[in-house]
Image 1 (cartoon, rainbow, N blue to C red):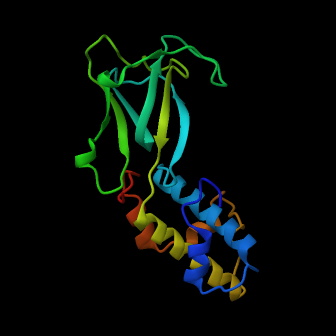
Image 2 (cartoon, rainbow, N blue to C red):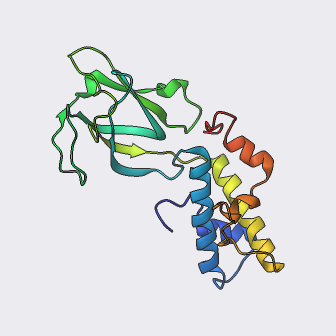
Length: 204
């Protein structure tokens, strides 16, 4: 199981009523494709990753949007000039007392990550202006699991698996517009639940 997969393969096999491992390779590929599709549709990570992300400057000096979601933050640093690729830049750390995650935990839906990092405005700390490349460094846990999203993703894989058993198209087919065939295995209501007209996730 890849770190980016939002469905557990063993649980999926049980749900599908598959007793052997003959279809594991196909199922693993379908899980990867569905996980990628969900993240592409919502712009959020539903498999948590402990990692370091780099951002360009922010249009708001005290607020940084984090589209993938941020569950916790162990380091936040800024630079006043463009920094090189590869994580070799030099950053000034912003202390934990001068930053927090928004919305606060008590205001989020169960299991949902924060969607932005906010600075207090005190201590002289501010985010670099837009256009300053890789000038913000954030280390922590990004993304968040969601039981509902896992259910939606599992249903899509099961539909693809049943279609394959019936001689339908495989999940790997890519349409002329570059869209993944796997998206057709989501029910319209499920896609609507994953995103609204603004492209923002509707589920935790």
